[in-house]
Image 1 (cartoon, rainbow, N blue to C red):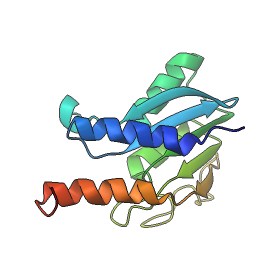
Image 2 (image 1 turned 90 degrees about the vertical axis):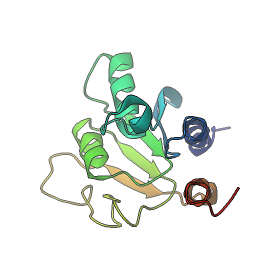
Image 3 (image 1 turned 135 degrees about the horizontal axis):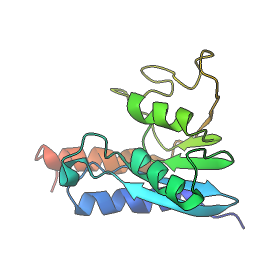
Image 4 (image 1 turned 180 degrees about the horizontal axis):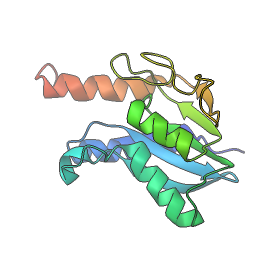
Length: 150
């Protein structure tokens, strides 16, 4: 039975909450095996590039000893931003599975559609999974931040 990889990405998002980070998790899978996993660390590292996707890509590149992640799939709980989508395209990720959309910064079709741009030399196949828990974890996090929920 195939593992539900989006649940693994959600486990990473939950780790981010414990660090008071925006709960986004990402994993990279090759040959049906998780080779990299990450969650947001922008606040803790004081690094604007420390998004879950970027950290996971860096880890996968180390594991495979290559910047090319051909044959790899990424599962991410929130639609990637422009920076992350660019890195996903550049790293040659094959399939990108997204848990929920980002109405303010999503670069995979919500605000802008980078993977759908024919000008790039690599095409990423985007699959929307729309996992309710991916959206819920973000909503609850921001409600707590605003003091609307305890």
